[in-house]
Length: 346
Image (cartoon, rainbow, N blue to C red; front, side, top):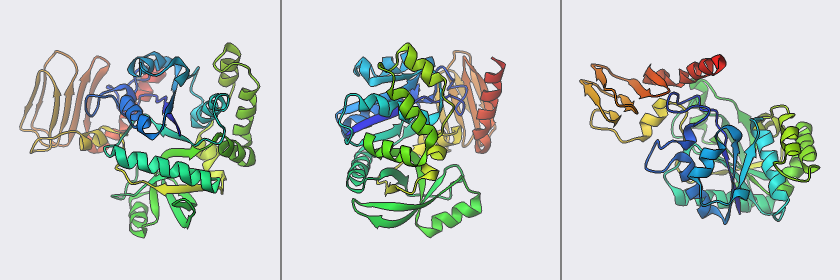
């Protein structure tokens, strides 16, 4: 089985720790390995072959962090063109040197997973389900609370291989709707993992997605992957998001409920939830930090100058060479708005 790690994030949601040139999957946020390195550690247990799709702006950092992978394992986008084109690019590269019926798992580089055994079991089960059903198979996470931050998959009837047909995809809901999904028991968080062979993907893309089929055909005609001609052709593509270009148009998808814990670290609140905390809910990281009478705070200082936080609750304080963030924890997801404004000025 082949794993493709998608590692092309834009670095907005965890600013100022994360930037477009050094997005969050390159950071050590939990433990001594970066999120990218942890994703690779899991991929090595799924199968013998791993590819990484990343974007040119930070590809050198990706190579340095995964130095034991050969050069041929790095698929470098000359510019971001959306997850749909990213997947089409990887499929084209893999089709040139692998069995087109071998299952491929497309996974993300910036997710936090503790249960590696459950992860491997779920991915391999999805690969088997795809092979026996001829469907593209997704991984769905059993929801543990009524999240309004994730999209949902409504699963339907069981099929061969331990998967389920998909009744519908749901956008990020409001709290009342999310509570209804949780109580219904047949809704799963959509973590954005896709599993299927080259032939399975290409067949479904041709059937339901003219835009992505155009990408597949265009790239396949160019003799050398990542050559100048190839990169120019890729840059000429319109952005395509896989959810809109394929998922929501296809009736030939299935889902396997995951047997592992999962977190998409989309905000500092999410990060605070998974890092070690003291008895008052505080996480303090870095030197020269002076918290006094604080509760439920995340403080990180990546510089030498002192940081003092006094008498506060439910806050995020992050000091890095890229900037300083002070935010109420429950609205820390709005950090991305600041990062995008900063990018627009550059």
